[in-house]
Image 1 (cartoon, rainbow, N blue to C red):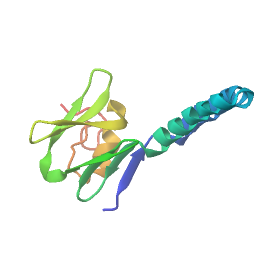
Image 2 (image 1 turned 90 degrees about the horizontal axis):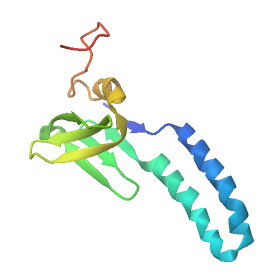
Image 3 (image 1 turned 30 degrees about the horizontal axis):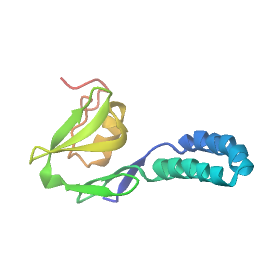
Amino acid sequence: MAVARMRMSRTALLPVFLLTLCVLPAAAAAPAASLLLLLPVLAAVWVLRVGVDVGEDGLTARSPVGRRMVPWSRVAGLRVGPHAELWLVTTAGTQVRLPAMRARDLPRLAAVSGGRIPSPEGPGTGEPAQ
């Protein structure tokens, strides 16, 4: 199984581009304000880097500055948070936030996990499992 990379949609770069256009006049007006150009750069790094990699060895949650790998043997389950965000629960009882993933992404996560994460839908019915 190849590594499946689950990231934010690249259309999220459109607001980053618009932010760049908004910051340019202020950055051109004063040399000290050129530091404002770091905001769109940081936002672009966030969009391009943050996500989850699903591979044969386990899940890797990636943040802008780091990553946390959890082997399949240490995965106890998933938890859906109050705002539909997904959390990976480990056998040690710790939780790892799965960035850029929501409850609506569960079927896709189940599909790329190779059956290690059960699908929230019934087998072949398209209906929620009971």
